[in-house]
Image 1 (tube, rainbow, N blue to C red):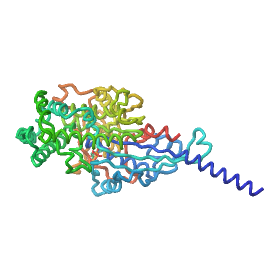
Image 2: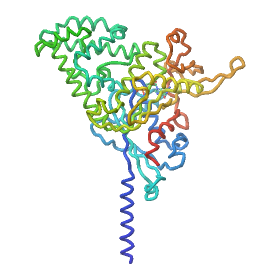
Image 3: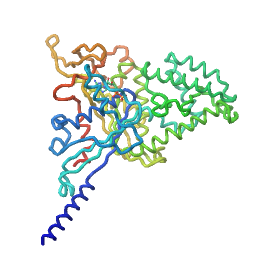
Image 4: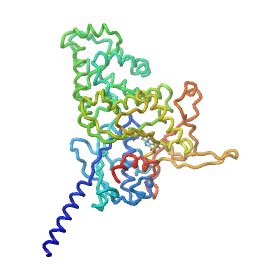
Length: 473
Ligand code: GDP
């Protein structure tokens, strides 16, 4: 009798194990955004909140916390040994320094895995197991890499002509004249001179870097020139566009010998597309389940009209990668599986509480400008305004008898404690006259000194519910 009972117990243990194993889920959540959008801060803040002892208190709108079903979250070995690990410890060390510093920004693809244990409530799972695990892989990669998508369908000549349309933006950099002079000095039909091509490519890179880092623009192609990751210094990046809109010139250049400067540049462009752009989509992008795109609208507003327009155009290009419609280019490469896309305005703690809805509305208006007007086949889309690591607190002060909302935080440079109303966030895409009488100045703050109760955030719980809620019922 005891034997039969033992056999039954062992069978039931085994089936429970099987159900439990079946209950464990995997989700690959990718995080992107253009340089400075807040990817590193987001991942650091999110993991900090998830692994904090006070997780329930800090993430009240995340259903699994709200219903007291979260058992625990811990970091695990990442699954892909060929992707760099997200430097969580380095980021936390910066935030905990005295005075606190922002962690170093994303420069390459990296990943980390979390095991989130919870008690399921629904269906068979809820009946058969008392706990399940969601393995969450968070992958961080530069949004600039998505700007290369159009290169998949453009030949070198067409790409060059497209880049020449950006001459006005390129000309706003002091690096432009030297690039242009060097470009003009190349005899494109003559035998390629490797040293010369490398020098001109370096000048082009300096131009793109200046446009993005100093002039505040966002679009740059090829995207790896800004953030080369492992490609730093490789010949794959030794090309540049020939800035000309003259189709007949390109027809002539096409006839040049195989070893001509033009043909060498063309070959490098093709190699870049096939060895860099395509593999990123095939090996990484194809395996993402969900995607967060962070957008820093406030810095773009601070920079001015041309830069804000450029950000809007860049965001539209970034979103091209999430168009999985039937005729889509990516569909021909692989079967995309991203089923949820969240586009979040980051750093929402830069503005007072009464401006948060304007920020969200502005983001919606920016997205309306994009070619897709939020029409994403087979992919659910949501927008939010968040702050992963709040650097300010909000409150109100009385000014001439009227209460006014303010934020308070330490200025990034001087460390001075500032209490201010940064201004109104435009609710709609700013009209031309808006830029003349700008009613705002968003100040950069340094991270808050780590309060006793841990780092603060805005709406990460809301974000988690959208991104993971359906996987943890
Ligand atoms: P990345 O290039 O996308 O990785 O951007 P980072 O995460 O490095 O963020 C760039 C900068 O934005 C940081 O150095 C901070 O100054 C600022 N930042 C990012 N997230 C927040 C936030 O939630 N609140 C505030 N106030 N600033 C933020």
